[in-house]
Every structure is written in C-alpha cells, then in structure tokens.
Length: 89
Image 1: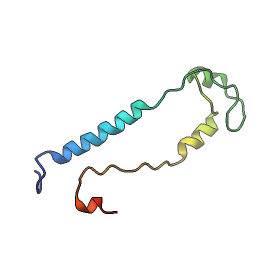
Image 2: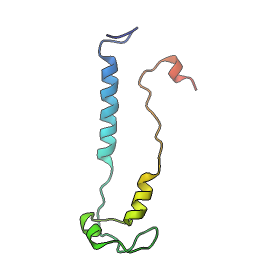
Image 3: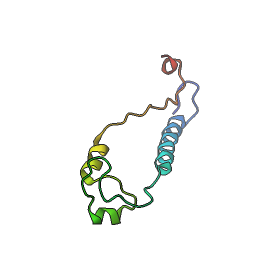
Image 4: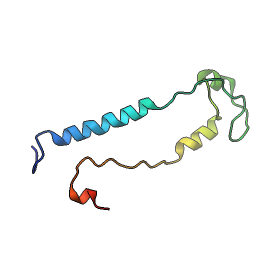
C-alpha cells in the first residue's frame, strides 16, 4: 500500500536501494595487499607471525586494530524520500 503520490512498493524499493548502496560500499573497500610489517605501525610492538601469514599486508597489531575497529565513524544518512520536510536544513 502506497500513500500519497508514491507508487505501490516504493518503500520496499527505498530499502533495497539502501541495502544495495551499502553492499557496493563494502565491496569497494580495498583489501590488504603487499608485505606485512613485522612491528605495529602505531605502537611498534611485534606482530605475531601467525597474524602476518593470515592477513597479508597487515600493518597493526591485534590490540591497535581492535581499538581502531571500536571507534565510531559516523556517515551521513541518505534521504530517499524527497519530502519538503526532509530537505529543510
């Protein structure tokens, strides 16, 4: 059921478009390549051999990577509705 001028299924199309955008963004992320460092680029602690073999191109130790992964990086949302209220700043 659509409301107003929206066609049937418009909300589902918006949801699917948002999901496809996020999947494309994730696929575009560059994978690690090249030689791994023997010592962490941030804290200079040695990186375990098993980690270097499992992740070619790794630059951070486990502790620094976990700290970096735990930091929140907000991204702007995407407004697909196009209503006047959503366009006001």
